[in-house]
Amino acid sequence: MCNFLFIFIRALHEQDKRPKGGLSRYQFFCIATAAIFAYNIIPFYFFPSITALSFVCWIWKDSITAQQIGSGMNGLGIGSFSLDWMMTTSFIGSPLVVPSFVIFNMLFGYIVVAYIILPFSYWSNAFEARKFPMVSTNIYDSTGHKYNISRILDSNTLSLNQEAYDKYSKVYFTTSLIYSYGFSFAQYTSSISQIALFNGRSLWQQFKKAYKDDEQDVHSRLMKQNYESVPQWWFYFIFFPMIGLAILVCEGFGGQIQLRYWEVLLACALVLLFLPVETVLRAISGLGFSLDLLLETIIGYMNPGKPIANLAFKLYASEAHLLASSVIYNFKLSHYAKIPPKVLFLYSQILSTVISCFTDFGIAWWILQSIDNICQPELLPRGSPWTCPSERVTYISSVTWGLVGPSKMFYPNGMYSVIFIFALIGFFLPIPIWLLSHKYPEKKWISLINFQIIFHASILIPFGGTVSYSSWFIIGILFNYFIYHKRKEWWTKYNYILSAGLDAGSAIFAILVSVSLQFQDIYGVNWWGIELGDHCPLAKCPTIAGIIVEGCPIIH
Ligand SMILES: *[C@@H]1O[C@H](CO)[C@@H](O)[C@H](O)[C@H]1NC(C)=O
Image (cartoon, rainbow, N blue to C red; front, side, top):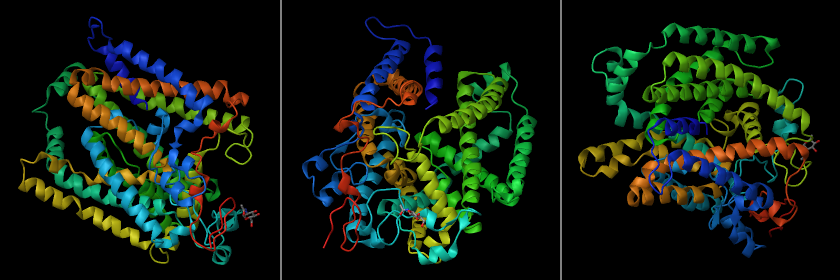
């Protein structure tokens, strides 16, 4: 979301005369920001239900199957859409800033998974799926209820109580989550082969060039003439003490973090391995991917039964990865915007990290102190936003991968081992595309088929719900395909500014609302439309006899 700052700076930076009767970029930005700010009052305050409008559920109020097909939150989301920019972009990102080939790859992947794989797999009851909802991030026990984590957690040592686990139940996933995991693995492996095949040669040549001083492009020459570059030792000076501190934190405090020093080092190594792969994808497509699942799996096999170790390992690696990739991104943009590298290093890397460290901690502490029953949806007032959906996902994944551990769910003792085959398939799929693109070089579209992106589409279904996708595809295709081809001038001038403005307006709105209204327990007008759900209560119901869940009809 912070990209809007850079785009904004660039828009101000460029020579931008206002055309007669038109708007300058800066004016356009301000109008977009103000408009979305004003509009957001509707989904936030008066009518939160428009974040997920699922018409099928309103028509068939008593049919589980209809609601599973129509629900945008817990079902396939057919006929469901969102009128909320934040909902549309919070999981997949802004559809305005990705090129149209990415949108079409995503669309293909999404259609295959949401309309073919998920329904067939669910209704054929693969993995006993019909005991559970189709789309949800929750984990379940063998009776179709949400898994009761307190029953298997030894609260003194924060580790697994094996005896209680054996007595209770295995961990079951919803269909959407199984395939989300499967396609994540496929994305990791396809990334490696895709980048090696399509970009390997040019990456290697650029790498060699970077070590020689000749053959520089105009930007590098200008930067070199005007500014000194950041000395290598500045990086080392931060790198080594920080790893030392991380090890100290993990090994100290009586081992409460449960992580060992060589596991910290492994976390760093994994970041180094995947950083180039992920940043290339980001550079090509504007989409990145998360390493979370890979990290959770690795540490889950190495250190099973230890949820805190799992969390710590994942956070060390994924935060480092996120920051590293944003530093690279900032240096790249500042290279084109001609910002002195040393200044960028000091401000963006040192100062902003130090400040955000204290403010993040302070704000988190303040919120935890000042909101009663935070993260307990049953106890919160109606319409309250403090239900912590993403923290819940983190908690559940630390339980599945850390406390229970992948060896009980996947290879060798689990029922979901088969999804590791996805990793194998993912690795080989880019090869035929590469061969075809060489055989028919005149057909340019072949080389635009990208399995990393195709797999990416379905990974987010259980997290964001299917509803985020429909609006994302509509907006994306409208702007980056139709307007791009029909109104190129408008697109070139305003498209990115529009995206930046919408993000900025929404961000300012969210901050203002949380500090002004929500801290006073003011949550909006009390009526049917205040529900932040999609009014499809039956979409969460089991569809097989013998499973009894509260609020669901009993099936015979
Ligand atoms: C989960 O298990 C604990 C301990 O056995 C019990 O006290 C609690 O009521 C259970 N929670 C639910 C939601 O069933």
